[in-house]
Image (cartoon, rainbow, N blue to C red; front, side, top):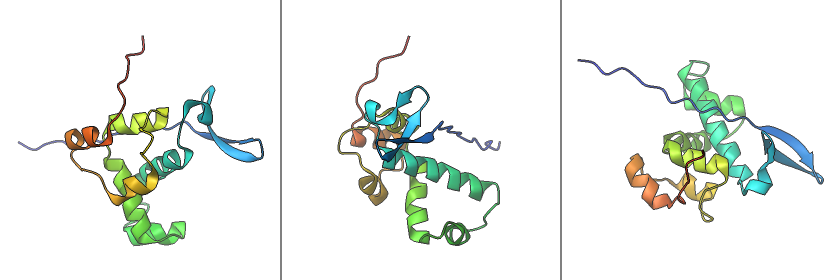
Length: 132
């Protein structure tokens, strides 16, 4: 018996708006800074999923080709792509601004546990309440 390949699709509705002389990432109806969102981390997660899609669809055959097209180092592309391996609840917490205070992009790029059950306790996500 063969296992079917499953794909996780993450849609991140983002827009960039000028706010007080700076650019802010705005989610539908709520300004990112008001929700405690780490714009740098959100951009990296969005970039990671975009790059993964480019590789999966065959737009680029290798990380080196993708890195050359983006005019960045292939090593950085590789490290950012690891963000696509985060558990879905961690990605959701990042997008919602519920990530722990110490969760920053440089820390995540160093590497985290690949197995979701192992990663979630390590990252100490705050408890969520079901929206009703």
